[in-house]
Image (cartoon, rainbow, N blue to C red):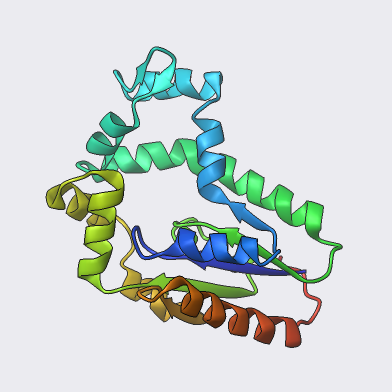
Length: 201
């Protein structure tokens, strides 16, 4: 098995790439999906409510409030990450163990791949990229946030320019889907042709 990491800063097109790869017939494990699961866990919500008073209402996490708190205070962000990241790491290790004997490519879609140290598990890393203004407009429209809120979120994340330095390949997502798909097919074909059985650990 060869583990391929898909990452990129918010609004850079990481999720679009992951969806295309999945539609091409490859397994893609979504770290954001794992986060959604943990936010539905009652035990986690109890801990969250204790650490962040007012963040749980009617049995559900108030993600908008949480976002305002953690992206305005880096220490609060670190607190939240300390609750979530260990769970995510165990999920990733389980995926790797469960698929260790299979051949071919396995993809993991993770916005914080480098921040969580997951790059050490990957054989190849693809970073999504786009012009800053396009990135900003995408996030403001998609998440219904202000330019100020976007800057708060973007400023606490690892810069995409730094992620690019660590990438095996960079994909500019500012193109029509058919061209993006064709580019990804070429990248995947090259990976399959160079496939060599290795343990990610």
